[in-house]
Length: 436
Image 1 (spheres, rainbow, N blue to C red):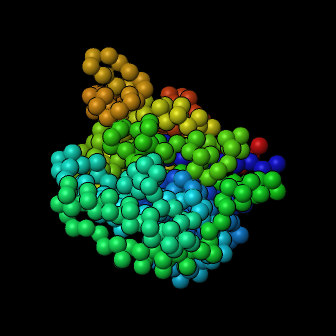
Image 2 (tube, rainbow, N blue to C red; image 1 turned 135 degrees about the horizontal axis):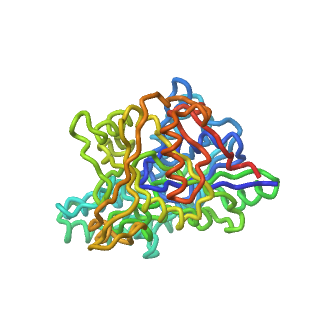
Image 3 (cartoon, rainbow, N blue to C red; image 1 turned 135 degrees about the vertical axis):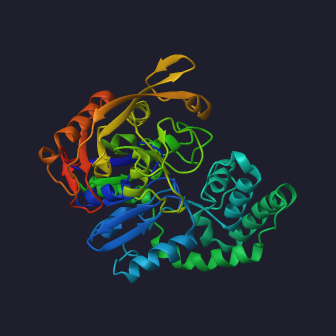
């Protein structure tokens, strides 16, 4: 009987979802991306090859696995074709015969990124810290029901008419409100029409294809982007992304029923990181050599795949994870980058907050309350032994096992997988998500 698994980030993104999706893909018939855009970044390490993906699901590195981009994704077709598919195919990976794209995906066009950049520039000190790739404005158009979608590309006259109307509106905002240059209509139209013919063979009814795989007994793996605490509804609003990053979005963003979702795997680092603006209760100073924050930053190579910005680093945040566990209905956890903590004499866990004089053990809703939280820490012994590359839980240092056990107890979610390095094989399995 088929079993379907959802992989979601439980922190502020960058938890290492790509490696785990790749690792689980050998048990899947199809891998599905269901939200976000090319502001996401997955890094896959296979031997001496490193693959950087934004939109293409991480299962593409496995032969025989079909990959799908669901209707919940906002799609920059030009980026997909020339920044992802071409480099992958040049490296010997067959992408086009195995990648299917929903006709319902909203298109990201040139004016979306122009709006994104103009808005951030005008915000000055109150910047959200977006990637400037047009994700938010594209989702705004979707909700406002003025978006152009993939299926519109194959009706040129209708596309041109809708584009002119939409671009007139956005150019008014760009020139009159943001005092920036208008986006050229002819250029946007020409590029869209050229890209349409290249993408046409990959467009398919993703919902129907997923139901067919499931009916035939094939496992499906759903791949989330960003992290739960960046969810537009449940994250540290307004310092969030523009889509729903939680497990429930796998249903709406790919066209399958909630009853087809069987196991939710939450990916979390052994510490916390965040890119861009917004509150971060357990944050540490990453600039001072010899400190835990500096070790996390340097040893963990904490630089954004998409943005190239240094990630902020801090201790593991239990109240934040508990909030994520409830929102997603987590079945199990995967702890990544445990090896980054090797050598620290002591390790702290943020076990709660003090918020305006009261103790709380769950991340509050909204950025203002989170910013007012003072972290409450519990300190545990560290370990000197290396955990890098270990594949057996029993081989972990006693203090590392105690640290993981404490996370399980406080968060009330079992740790089913531990990642001890970027390679596929550098993984400890305690319970396989695809097993009954």
